[in-house]
Every structure is written in C-alpha cells, then in structure tokens.
Length: 190
Image 1 (cartoon, rainbow, N blue to C red):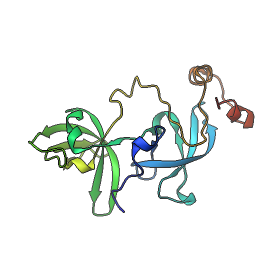
Image 2: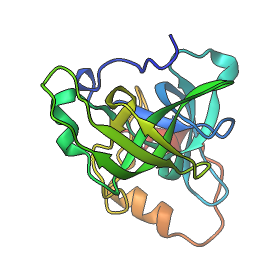
Image 3: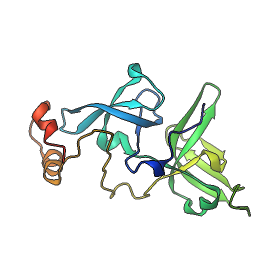
C-alpha cells in the first residue's frame, strides 16, 4: 500500500532507514545482507529495503545514508514538532509517492483532540527545495534533532557494531585502507 511505513518503531529498538541513491528517498531497512569498507575506510552495508526484493538491494554508507528510523507523528504528539525541525515527510506526486527529509517552515496550530490533529505543517523538502503543506499523517519526526552530535549506532539484524577503539581508528585514519576480510567483520561483533 503506498504511503504505508513498516512495523511500529516501538516494536524494535534497532529499526533503521536508509537513503537510496536511486530515488534519494528514505526507505525502511528490512535487513543488512553484507558489509564492506569503502576506499575511505567507512563502513558500508548492503541493505534490503522493506517490501523490496533482492534485485533492489543497495550498498549504503552507514555514516551518511543510514539512521535510526523516523517516528510516525501521533495526533496527541504534534507539539513535539517545532519550526525549523528536520522531519521525514510523505510526498505524493503524479509519478511517485516517497519519503523525503524536509525542514518545518511553519506550523499553523489548530485546536484538536487526541484522535485527529488539525494542525497544518508547511515544510521545505531538502531534495528539491519545494514547499508543501502536509497533514499530520504524512509527518515523521526524528528521534533526535541534533544529528550532528548524535552517536550513530545503526544496527541491522545481524550487523556488526564497531567497538569504540575500532570506530576511532577507522574514522581517524588517513592512510590507505584495505578491503575487509572475514576476520575484520567478525571482530566488529560484540
């Protein structure tokens, strides 16, 4: 069903989403299939997007193209979204219906009850700079607004989690990098 996101975030504390290079939209990650290091030494994972098959699997950079899954806005939680916040919004156009990052430009707050929010969210989409008015059902707020200081701890089912030492070495190294081998990947598991 278009516009429907995956399972409720509260069901899995490790739920993640990844930005596809094909359409620049964010998609729920069903699983991580494989791991490697890029030439710059950054961890990349081969993700399978929820609702897609093997042919759509894609390599994504864990640092810049993966994050903790955005949280669907509930009518009683509209106060959590403020002007200037980064949000994920459902954008439906004639030839596509996808989720993109957007900045909240303004919110026209209206009196409403806990079952149906009447507020109007005007957002500017980051991928094309267009502005749209979005209903609460199309708004997903970020678990934390300050992503620049947030330690990224994206975990897919069965994915490696680097130790603090490995993370520091890998991200601070300016020398040549090598392709990962099985022992590199095994060492990432706690």
